[in-house]
Every structure is written in structure tokens, then in C-alpha cells.
Amino acid sequence: MAFSKIRTKLKNRIHATLAKYALSLDTDSDIFSPKWRPQLLALLQRLPAETCRCVQQELELLDLVQAHIRRLEARILERVRRTPSIQLIQSIPGPAEILSIVIDREVGSIDRFSCPKHFAGYAGTVPKVKSSGGKTHYGRMIKQCNNYLKWAFIEAANVVVRQQNHPAWRRKHVVRLFDSTRHKKGHSVAVGAAVRAA
Image (cartoon, rainbow, N blue to C red; front, side, top):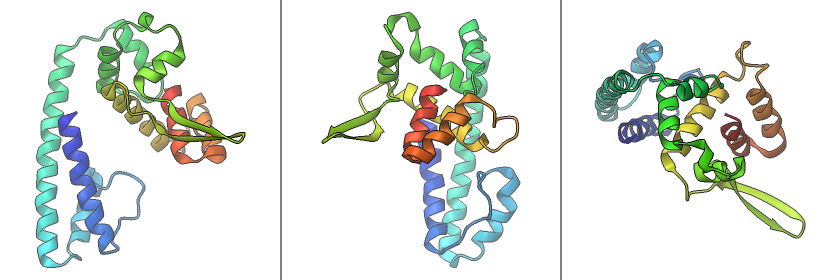
């Protein structure tokens, strides 16, 4: 998780620098993937020389962090055998192998939660709710929770959001739920709904 935070910070810095100079790639996918690396490097040449050098250094750091994450994930997969609970978690849309392991280890025994609402609260996947004068406002997801579990569910929901237009995913319940919630209550509430459904 620590490496993931570093990776996110590096990506955000590079995105911010590109945005500052009104530069972007015409794609909704990850511009840091190998597929887009040539176009990204070409885009960097349009930056001022010193800024370009700094962003290239950040890309080198990003590659180093990515390599560490890949090695760590491989080690985790070697160490943790595929248990029935992990296979069950992987049967729902979203969680891949690493996320399934995190969810399995952080949840422990599901029997310790008396109802789904208590589990959702523990995982931090419920929004803050404010009601006044007959109106209800749903805010961001709560902060007092198991942050590792919340992170894993949010990452799983991000997979759903990225794949929502893929033909194989369109009929999945979680995608339909995300789509209908987004139209009624906005994107952030819809992601929260996808997190709870995942």
C-alpha cells in the first residue's frame, strides 16, 4: 500500500504538470501504461526543457516503484495459497488477485458482522449522510474505518467504472447500479454504490 501511494503521487504530479501546460493524450486509459509510453514521451518534448527533464526523472521513479510493486505482488501470490474465500471474492466483478487477498485478510471472519450494514461501516464504504428540512445529502465516504479494506474496495470499484462500456460488462448488476446511481446522484455517490455492490 505504501508503494501504491508513492505511485499515485508520482502520477498525479506528472498529470498536474501536463495540465499546467494544457497537454494531454487523447485517451481515457492509463497514460503510464507501456502502450502509451511512446506518445507520452513525445508529449513531454513539448514542455520547457527543464520541466521536461524533471518529468522524465519522475517517470524513471515511477518505473522503479512499479517494478517494486510487481516484485511484491509476485511474492504475495507465492506466499498466499488460493483459499476458497479468495476464490469466492474473485467471483464478483472488480477484485483481482491482489485485491482479493487484501480483502480476505482484512475481513477475517465475516461472521463477526451481525449484518451487511455493519460490515459496510467497518469497510468505510458508506457515505456521510446529512438530513435537514426533509432533504438528505450524501457526502464522501466515512473516514473512521479499516483503510486497507476501503482502499481495496475502491480499487475494485474503479475496475468496474473503467470497464463499464465493455460489452462483456454492460449486463453485470454492479455496472447497471453504477450507471443508474450516477444519473440520479452523481459520480462520487455512484462509485460508493459500486464499492458496496462489489
